[in-house]
Length: 211
Image (cartoon, rainbow, N blue to C red):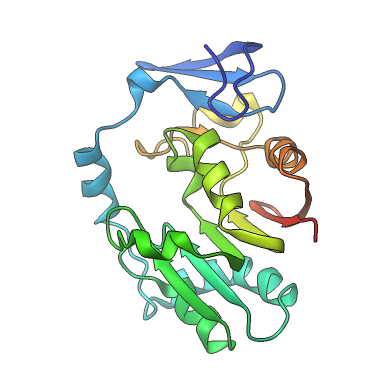
């Protein structure tokens, strides 16, 4: 089975948990389910509607600050960005706008405005989204394509634990999470697009295109 992130054929069975069979790529270290085990769009939408991501949710905003703080530290003033996969309650965009940046919204289910995908941005945020990509190679090509030269792609996603802890990992148990990225995976992606990759803290990566 080819890796859906880097298309490498050097993949091996990683774990079988109930009916779910996971694979791991020998080149980019991505862990993923086969496409036959991806959830339907209806299952995804039902799950997404259960997410609590309101700007009024103090706990959620504290969670997002782990991502927003290093991102804001790397952005010059008054940058133009897009929150890709913002969900029904775009709390992150609110936080970034409060810091003086302009932020467009895109989500294929909740903000399906394709017009915003025709522009180029100083930064693109992708928080708790990449693990849902059914076709991650194509999705990351789209994300990098939204950036201007020197732009920043900021990603937040759960880095997988060691194999002994994988079955009990809460992040894996979400039925809409179909691919998991190690730091090495994001570093591989950065190299393919001529970008640097910085990991300022666990589960957060900053990928900057060369200027």
